[in-house]
Length: 92
Image 1 (tube, one colour):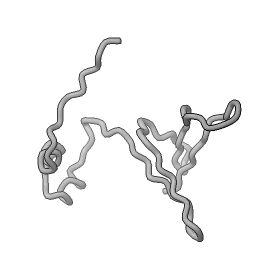
Image 2 (tube, rainbow, N blue to C red; image 1 turned 180 degrees about the vertical axis):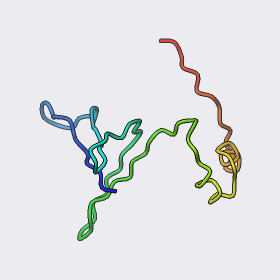
Image 3 (tube, rainbow, N blue to C red; image 1 turned 90 degrees about the vertical axis):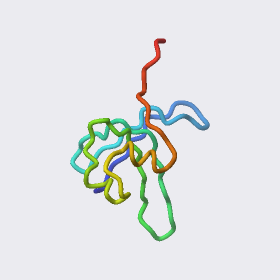
């Protein structure tokens, strides 16, 4: 799938934070919950981007997790020495 990355208008000179970047599928649907985008430029190759998105707790990973020989996301985390905990929002 090809995606389109839309950069926000830049104000002033110098570097800026990419707040307001939007990513769209080839059908024009915006991809939500993006955590990071790494763009790769290689001579004589197409430009590619790795897009990290937040994983919702109700995501069905049943076809992916067997590749890691586990049945649940908790098992995958535990097999790598981590423990998943619920993210409890703090009051501001």
